[in-house]
Amino acid sequence: MRGDELETKAGDKNHSEKGFPFGYTRFEKARIIGARSLQIAMGAPVLIKTSKTDPIDIAIEEYNKGVIPITVRRRKDRFVWLDKKSLF
Amino acid sequence: MDEKWLDKQLANYPMPDRVKEEIKAELMKYDITKKKAREIIERCYSDYLRNLMEPGEAAGIVAAQSIGEPGTQMTMRTFHYAGVAEINVTLGLPRLIEILDVRKTPSTPIMTIKLEGEYAKDRKLAREVASRIEATYVSDIGDISVDIYKLQIILIPDERAMKRKQISREDLIKKLEKSLKVEVEDEGDRLVINIKEPSYRKLLQTVEKMKSQVIKGIKEIKRVIIRKEGDEYVLYTEGSNLKKVMRIKGVDYRRTVTNNILEIAEVLGIEAARNAIIKEALDTLEEQGLNVDVRHIMLVADMMTSDGQVKQVGRHGVAGEKISVLSRAAFEVTVNHLLEAAVRGEVDNLAGVTENVIVGQAIKLGTGDVELVSRIGVKSHGDGS
Image (cartoon, rainbow over all chains, first blue to last red; front, side, top):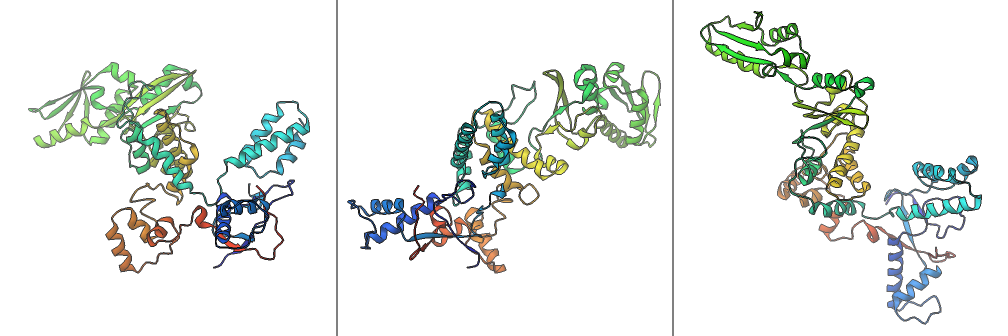
């Protein structure tokens, strides 16, 4: 497939200049947690220390700690993705 | 509040200019510290973000449901508009359907005509403008009778009616001679038209033509009502012809509107038509006490006007002109579309929602539009939200 690939910079710490995108959308979050919990359910090693047993709960905790080795690929031709504040 | 400092602060935020201006105008009113102002802007920004749609969200479906659900609560048939004296207006569901179907002429075309300067203030002048707009027929200003024996049409003009409509006798004669191609004789109290040919049929034809002849005003506009709104007189008309009304002296063409969307598109352009669709649809819904967010209607209006001419939402417009065969076939007249596509050898790229549902794939919306990749070896920081 054509189109430039854009990797998201998760967690924008620099707040002086606000730009798009801001982190993951709720759809991306759902997919990441979903994919990760499936891995955990099928026996993948858990990356954090936790007392939880439900794969989804574990995946959510991993997501919140930012250790899930999954990210999303965003294509320029998929949707209008504004990463320049000058667009407004 | 320091204006320059405020501008600099706001420049950092990716918000629409209108929102920024609003915040600025509001902040300029108060004398507050810079820290407080920054906090307020930050709050506004987070509020703005909450109102933003995320990429991948099904905006069209949300819009469809947001208009469709209130639509079920609309009255099936309502006429009579209480606000405007005696003018009938189609309202409720029939009107909404009319707007989305983009009928050639609405079932009740209406114009709201604002007047310029002096004309708006003085009732007499307003009436003068009204008489220039309202269609006046020969039968409105006199009695028509036919003398079969002498092959004559006799018109007895009503002086008072003519004065009220501001038509002079000379004008009337000139107009009749020109439009009917006959000679009119002025016999004092009456006007006589002699039919030269000895033909009874010709006589009757001329009478019929004369009856439907517009002497003054605009043919399409059947009635004009003058109302006082605030400190100015406003004309409401039954029937609509934007192009001609805008040219009439005394009419403020900048503030004159019609409810005929196609006419607006023709006279004022596609952007004006888009605004007209939004306004008409919103007014129709609001009149019924239904509150639908403008943005849903804006999306519909954008779809209807995006290619430069107004197209309806149905079979002959937005839904019928989709690129995808499967999507069109899923809507209406399935077999015809499939057959034609087969004959022409059309290709379907499976880009839309319907197509992917048909072939059984994940749709390109929401979670279905997310492409996961592994991030092994990358030092990780979650967004921690």
